[in-house]
Amino acid sequence: MKKKVISVLLCVAMATGILAGCAAVPTATAPAADAAPAEEAAADEAAPAAEGAGTFAIVTKSAGNPFMDRLGTGFEEVIKAAGGEVVRKDPESATADAQIAVIQSLISQGVDTIAISANDANALISVCNEARDAGIKVLTLDSDVDPSARALFCNQAGVEAVGQQLIDAVYDLTGGEGQYAILSATSQATNQNAWIDAMKAISEGDDKYSKIELVEVAYGDDEPQKSTDQTQALLQNYPDLKVICAPTTVGIAAAAKVLQDQKSSVKLTGLGLPSEMAEYIGDDDAHSCPYMFLWNPIDLGRLAGYASLALYNGEITGAVGDTFEAATLESSPYTVVDNGAGTEVILGPPFKFDPSNIDEWKEVY
Image (cartoon, rainbow, N blue to C red; front, top):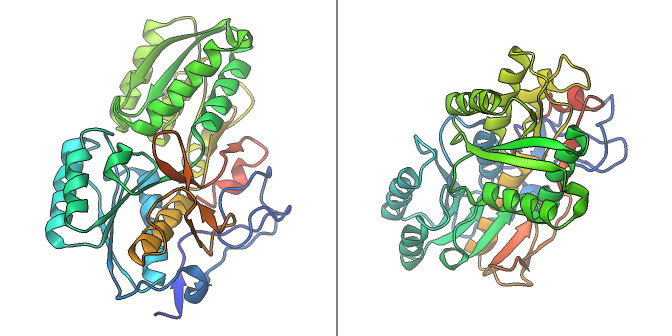
């Protein structure tokens, strides 16, 4: 095993001690002012050895997606530190067909595990089962497939927690009444749909939200230009619109630029990368996004890397109650739980980015 592995993440030491070394996204408000990047991490502490130096694949949603790039970075770091071989596949488009093609190529290649950020929960069932029949361990991260077709889902945050934070942000930014729209990724994205469903259920079940109106769920397919076009259409079609909520990093970045360039009074919130959104975060009329949320995508990739190793080494099967170590993540060890549909491990709660901390975090990821 290599003695050291270079980490591409600038690990920030939190003043409150929430984020230490290469930990998950914190729940504190800002990193310490004198925090310095961690250049190297000991491989012996980063990951368990991959017995027999297996081959571990990751399939992202699409090429050119910054969030997916960071998932891949974390995954690769953990697997390489353990002495395994990484095969990363970035489909040309965010479609089920594109993912099916790359998964079939991985089956032919004979990899040992495949971690997938799914573009469609149901369309990938057959190819995932084909991989499992070939003896490959299949797991998902970020966006799930039907639980019958994989061993484990590495979830960035609990669905209810994300839905609650997003609907509360909409309520806050509308002033408790008025129209809002959602700009999502693809209509088949399981994570996006689950968060949107949670938002709807929360708002429909509590009179507090009775005066806010969801006028449309638009889909930008995680493509910058289509997300831009969808934002412009929302502004044109709903002149009384107050807020756009974009639970996708590609969509929120595209929407932020449209709103700010047009000096629109419509406000934006959702899930975004600090490095892409810093120029749009502010609490005045000159900025389109007062605040947003996210978790650390590099840590989510790491979690999937550790889970892949644990499945490969036979330490877990994906059953409820299974536990595994993830040495560079703060919440280690992780325990597999039942999410009502299948089994999952949860990285941690979303973190709020606002004017008080965005300048610090834009340097991290």
